[in-house]
Amino acid sequence: MKSPTAEAAAVARSEQEEEAAAAAAAAAEARRQKQIKMLLHHILFNVTTLCIPIQAGPSVLAEIYNGDFVAAAKFIGMCSASDAAFQFLMGPTIGAISDQTGRKQFLLAGPAACALLGPLYALAPYSLANVWLQRAIGNGCNGVSGSGATSAALADLCSGMELAKNSAAMGAYAGLGVILGPILGGVILARFGPGAVYLLRAAFSAWHYRWLQRNFDETLEPEQRRPQLPGGATPWQNPLSFVKLFTNGASLAKLTLFNSLNIFTEGKNLNDLNQLWMKANLGMSVGETAAWTVAYGASMFAGGMLTKNYLMPRLGGMGYTRFAFGLSGAGFGTFGTFHSRLAYWLGLLMLLPGINGAAGSYCKGALWTGHAKAAGLGLGEMAAANANLRSLLYIVGPVLYTRVYAHFTARKGGNAGAAYYVAALVGCAAPLLLQAGFTHEDLNPQQPPAAAAPKKGAAAVEAGAAVGDQGGAEKGAAVASNKKDEL
Image (cartoon, rainbow, N blue to C red; front, side, top):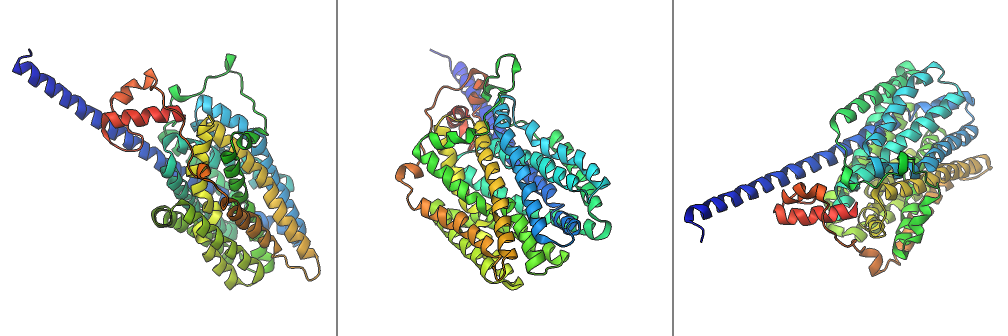
């Protein structure tokens, strides 16, 4: 038998170990929450960079084409398609590399490219070649750092409903960028011209790069990464790799189609149309278009917070989805039918719950991600395949909208607002019809089978490295083990 002294010592050691485990779990959770917040701020800065020249671009093209908005619309559509084509070709390979080497380097790509290209544009702001370079290459790299890399990093840190809520919060922070970017760019454009706008963008991007490089930790730990190819060869991927999202089960295919239709309501697809509409059809000044764009960003922030904290918890995931899509469709219909500034502001208010594609945040965050993980896709591979599909639709969307706009603008008696009807039908009505047929299996993704935690993570497991909560060593071990398997 153990002596009372030995038993007391054993109890004391056990208590110390439990305290150490609880402290380690709390530290791990605090670090995880810090990483999530930094990703949200990264999206804020990334979108700010994208939106700083949002008014300078159409203004420059209007001067180049001597006020011919039809020609300007076609060139803008071509630039947006080039940006999307860059991401379409490179996205899958970038995602595969990030599964092997980590996310951080790709989060840094956009700030680096915009910091380097800005001064070049300032030398010749009225050159069509320079306009194309900034939009196709600069915005393309910015896109690599945006939703694709950020979504993969966010999915490294959380899953399920927590991921859905943080995805909504990501949209809210993007909204702050839509507010900040046009304000900064509009002030500089009015006082110093378009060249100075891109110098501001370059300076802001350089600061963003420095901040991210110094403060953000890699989210994909070495033991969670996929093996590299022999000799460190680049894992080149087929640009059509998004097809795997349609061939790994009926549920994943349905949800991928649902997300694809939802993309047609995102600002990246509609922005060129919005700017042309306000300038050419509503006669808004630079200040007025800036005010509406800032209000759009404020609506993204307000809508994201409203969704995360009120609508989704109270209406449920699918209840919120139906509500947001229905109201968004009515908002786009208002834009296309009533050609007045008042209607444009009222329509914006109607978009608020599902603005910028947020209406699909539950289906993407909780359902689509769950089915993709169950199919055995790596998070980087999954995010890249989805980003690749998005890039393809970012080619189709701006071209579709600007072509419809140009067609009905040139046609005598035509309603150029038909472009907004297309958004209502494709981006809102079609997803609503599709989700009406979702089955129980579609709405309840299966989790991949659990496996033992890797030896490299044993210390964290023993310390109770809680991924979703601070429930102690035993609960932290289970969550950590499941998280390793998902990755």
